[in-house]
Length: 344
Image 1: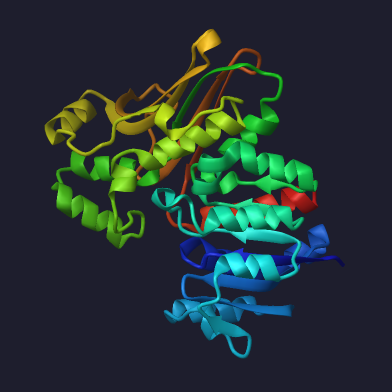
Image 2 (image 1 turned 90 degrees about the vertical axis):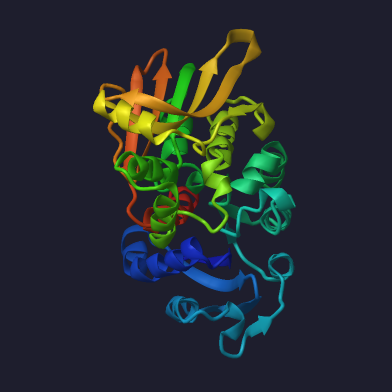
């Protein structure tokens, strides 16, 4: 049975949960797919650990649940071991990269980890938006040159296979409009505001449930949704978009009375990412809070749901929706991408 040697960079919400999934699904992976995932190295912000015989998934989870670093892993952990150096030094088949997004810091350390892994001949699976937003064409070229795959299904709309549907199932179509609600927390907050909660209480509730980061501006100002739209544009629409190409309006400053009035008229506000075909000009990209009617495919999304709608010339209109009450589906995209590489 082949062993897939994995390096995992990032042990936050997604990385830790992926370790839980890998341990829980080990028997299924062996029996159904003939695969064994072996974690040969892992890194977090404080250090790293590596063992060619494999780290124990459960021990990694226990360390993180206890608030410790992977550098505290018995015998083979090391404080201060940088993720970039780990990827450069350890022999592996695939890099699993879920480091913090850090667009303002040039996507580091994730971007350099991805570059290094591809240059060393590893496949790369990432749920980190920053490398794909900042260097999509470059990374795809590196993957082609190495004869390896770069997969990033988890970068858009959590566990929803929005990219898979567009890339795989709509081949041959012209997508003349794409609409998506790829950010969960903004819809949740707007629903809380509609129900009468003050802004600060709504933000604190979202933080307490783990769906809003300490720096809320990434979500509230529309950057997260814009980044996901850029990824959809490049990967699915074949349109070389950048963040600055997106006309972006966030949800801060929304009037609660307008939110309640819209709900009373049967509308629900969502932060809508949209790509509209403009012929020779390509696609017009926008992110803005929009009141959606109940008969719109995304107009009935619940508190913790996301969705995407593809309007095509030959496949009709296709809608996909996910309910994601916790980060497990997002973490599971790493497994989905791994299986796409090794069990095509």
